[in-house]
Length: 322
Image (cartoon, rainbow, N blue to C red; front, side):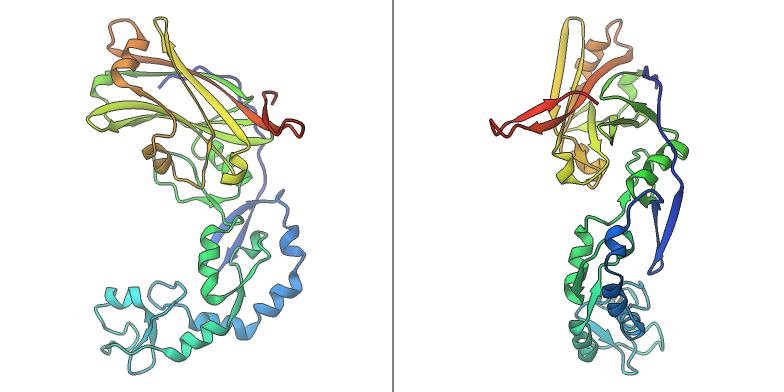
């Protein structure tokens, strides 16, 4: 890979950790936790010794996740979730007795009466939910940690945006740049032998936000393609405030793409498989590369802008300044 790019400019941040229910979430010490701090009385009343001990009773001894109906029990009263009942081949993991089909209706009723805070309350979520509604909320909670957006490896690191920016720079050694325009050159020898390839992720800082530029090769239908797309390091709703364009060309021809960056809440694979980006057929990519077409040499240019709402016209006007 060869990349022509600007000088990078980022600032490192000090990181803290929050330990909650056996997991570790990372967040920057510069992140505001005013929402969580504003309701300590509510959280303390809900998560007291009694509620905590009941919550522990609702923890499956096999997968350690919260149990939801149907909750199963053996003849000796040991409980586990319905998913793990299959995994342990209908044998109680505590006493090894056969489980049968006994449901723990009493524990299900107790769970129905509980109200608990979102498990991300330490990260700022002030919401409290009935036990059976809590799981659905947590899967969509705006305060839940983000996953690492790096492509090319299965990285399980999670955290807030400042932490992930530092993680990408320090651990994955990605290219970091300041500015809303870019001009990158992607090179690959023997491109006809490449069916799947991922080039180094590039992170741009502009408008006080961070954006990830992806470029890769993969099989689409019967033929290989190259694809470039942008992801926004934040939630989907905020991502819709921005637009971007990509352009690639050569030999007097060019392809352009304009769209809205996808949030990193959507996985890299989900965005790629939805074809939401600039797609270049391999033959076209080699045509743009020029020469004897034995080496890929693509120059991808682009820009990011923020849409500004005009109260007079009701239209969104682009803001190109970073």
